[in-house]
Image (cartoon, rainbow, N blue to C red; front, side, top):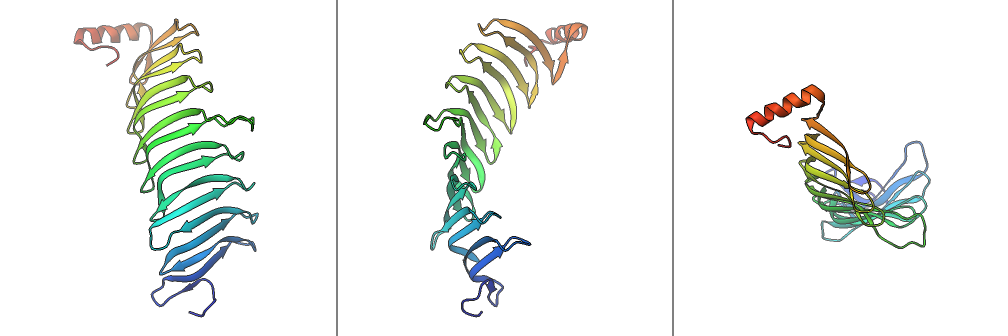
Length: 237
């Protein structure tokens, strides 16, 4: 390798020293950084095609840990987090172009694992509130566990459960005043059982029955209910 040259590899084919790459057909850098024995070291900078900074990733010496900052094209921070072995790890924070937090995600070995919180982003820049719009639970990149969604005033909008990425059990929707709005029942991601709708006072105004995703009505519904009664099976089971 010649000293000071870029994009060099050693006799074993490993990247060594300064590297940079340009966008195809453009005289604009896509990234620049340093390698040692094929591993990124020090600071890497990534660019948009407009030549504005897209990301800065700082690789810590003698460690598998890197700190990453991603930016919107307007220069505001888009996300911040940690890489371990070049995959996402720990808590990542994401921001909108107005620099307000939009979500917080938990990663383990590059997979969503744990709580993900999505926030309302106020249009008014003077509004500094951080109101969650939804909270999810993940296990190895798959939705598992309790789910909650919120109205902008902070009251609960929806509650339910996920199992292996699919809705299960009873899901409840609420009006902004806290009264019941809907009740849905799911099995393996499809509606199954009695589902109801309610007005703003919480009074039931509509009721429908689903059998493994099929909406049953009239004679078909009565026959199915009669059949389940004879078998001792609850319609919601």
